[in-house]
Length: 174
Length: 161
Image (cartoon, rainbow over all chains, first blue to last red; front, side, top):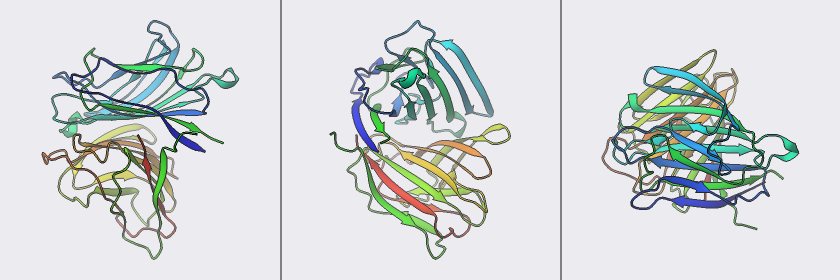
């Protein structure tokens, strides 16, 4: 087994509109991503949309996500979507210095044996009030073949704030 | 070959029915911490985590429970609760603490695990949320409501980044 850092992105002052990994090596069994994210807008922007292989209008993503916020718990799903909805992984700018988090796994990301890559995520948005906390867990498939790049953008088209981080690792089983 | 990004910092296997487990003087050399628990105690399934031996009212979190139905709850308190087992059997939990060593972000804590009864829980939370200070983490403590069963295993890894 080996677990190696592929690339890290740390957002500087001014923020960025997207976080993207390209040229992902195809020599491992699984990808693991650690996100720590914060938006710059005054309202909570709890979600991020994740696109694969530069596709923004394809219909290659299926997902089902369970989440909890306030007194609500629910399950949402989509078939043939053009992005994976990373619900509830992003801190809002109205809470000082709070960052949401997400652990993301891409299993079979090279689409070996023609099987689809599997997406698993668990995340949460931090907030300084208990009712504002968000928690989510989801699973999905990408049906467009091997994943060689992916990017995330905020669901309200705002920027990711300074000190947001993303670390991409590759995991080899043997 | 690239340098390994996951390193074992320490392992603790319970003996003598301890009441708590501590990892102290955690080096600041990594980007994230990962804790793997395989553990049991005599009673409740909830385990309590504190960082930096801080038992002030500085933890806030929300849990998503998968049992016979889906439910969620939130809490603030003097520790961070994670599910790891039910009485009578072991359970497993993975805990990640992102950017644990920096002094510019509040500390995200992610925990996901379950018990032999088939309940799964994912918990997200934050440390130091209302103190107005942002503190690097150098210590993690675990405790249960009763003594920890012998053989329970706790492993602390450093994740480079």
